[in-house]
Image (cartoon, rainbow, N blue to C red; front, side, top):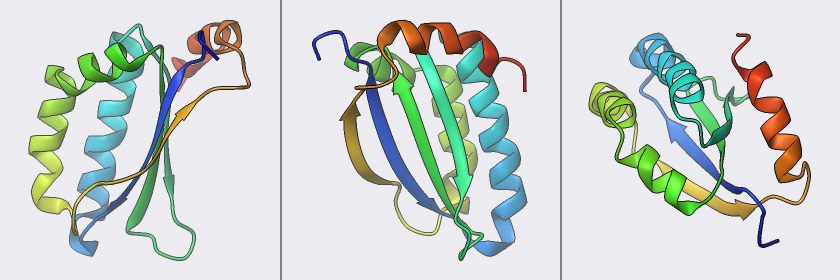
Length: 117
């Protein structure tokens, strides 16, 4: 697992009146992250089926340094400053993970298809 990618799974609750602005800002941010940060290999935003104001973020980075670079990026900080008042509570880190499948080569091969949104 020394060459495994690094992942994070987060839960974000949003105040109902901010659902669409949150989604607009988050999807815009995800597109920028995927296209502008070469060490980001997956960025998924999913809505909870039972609670439409609860969102799950799944992100895969080359390594922990890439995560730190992301958190320090203008894109991330601009997004956080935009959505902070829309949040219903704190961003919850559910898990930090290391990839088993796909392999690092598999993630690298999939990266181009993420840009086809």
